[in-house]
Each structure stands twice: as structure tokens, then as C-alpha cells.
Image (tube, rainbow, N blue to C red):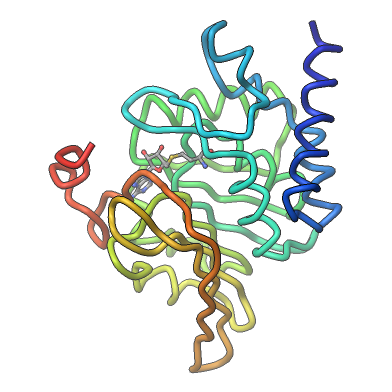
Length: 223
Ligand code: SAH
């Protein structure tokens, strides 16, 4: 069983490489994190290494591996980085970040998802992660600033301003921006008072719900 998963994971890495993911550190992290531990139910288990999003309950999804890989690549992580992630979800992306950075602070608004993610991260022996149940659109000011910030839900138009404020000078922030149906990966780099903005690939994420995001009723109505 475990050999089958190893094989499926190696094949996924190959397909991501063929799909244009170049950063070997990112590919190694994807090759090391057991995605099947982040999905539940035997019907999903057999699909755990397909390159698509899967439901994780509460109308949320574990992101498509290619999108996880691309966002992680855009972050350009180093082992010294302190990272903020908004939208823990299954915790899969969190585990990838934890392998590449010094410490990951992750925020999830749905308590049940956060609890499951905490348990999985602990089972994997990753000790450099802290997960908080709270609205991530306000950031995590007590532990700011961050070297890197990743938002894994669709911002309502533009990135929540508190997140840009909590980014360190020279830091990188990656966020899907757009409307509820479709977004683009956007990469911000903070340079003193200036913030560079670069628009990348088209993606589809569940809505970022919160004070600087969608209202809960907006998020549900479209789905
Ligand atoms: N990276 C995750 C993606 C999960 S989907 C994974 O691959 O599993 C996006 C997640 O963002 C959902 O779990 C959703 O509940 C969460 N979310 C949405 N708005 C949020 C907010 N304001 N603060 C924290 N989490 C939020």
C-alpha cells in the first residue's frame, strides 16, 4: 500500500516537472509529503495523487498539486523564512511550506478543518508550524512581520491590506486575486514604500471569507 503511494507520488512529481515546475526544492517537498494523509475516505484515497483539487468537507477543497507547486515556487522560500499562510484547509500546503521554511504560521476560519490539519501535521512530526482558528484577512499582527505570505483562498478583488502591511521589506506575498469564479495568481514584492505587483496564471479557488474578504453569505450563494 505504502509502496503504491510512493509510486503515485513519484509520478505526480514527474507530471509537475513536465507541467513547467522548475524549482527542485519544491518538487522534492511534494515528493516527500504524503498527500493521501490529507484527504479522507477510501474513494478519495485512490485519487490522492491526481493533479486536481478534492473536497475536504465544509464546502472547501485541498488545492490542485500543480497550483500548490506553482504558488510555492513563486514564494521563493528559504530555510530562514518566517511564513504566514491564510487558509490552512487540509494542511497539505502547510506541510510543504514547513519543509522549506523556518516556521509557518497558518490561519483557518473553520475550526474543524484546523483541528484535523493540526493532527496531521503533528503525525508527520513537523514541529515548526502553528495553526490558529481566526479570520486571516486581518493577518497575525502579534507575530508579524513575515518574510513570505501565502493566501490559499480567492481574495475579493485585491489582497487584504493588513497582509501587505505585515510583509517584511523585501518580502514576497502570493495571492489569488479576481472574482468568485476565476482568479489569477498575483505575486507582490515589498520594496520600501513601493510594492511591485506581477500577475501570473489563471486559477480557481474557494472564496476568502472575512473582514477584508467576502461575506459568508456571498461565498455560499455562488456555490
Ligand atoms: N491550502 C489548502 C486550501 C484550502 S481551501 C489546502 O490545500 O488544503 C481554502 C481554505 O481557506 C478553506 O479551508 C477556507 O475555510 C479557508 N479560509 C477562507 N477564508 C479564510 C479566512 N479569512 N481566514 C482563514 N481561512 C480562510
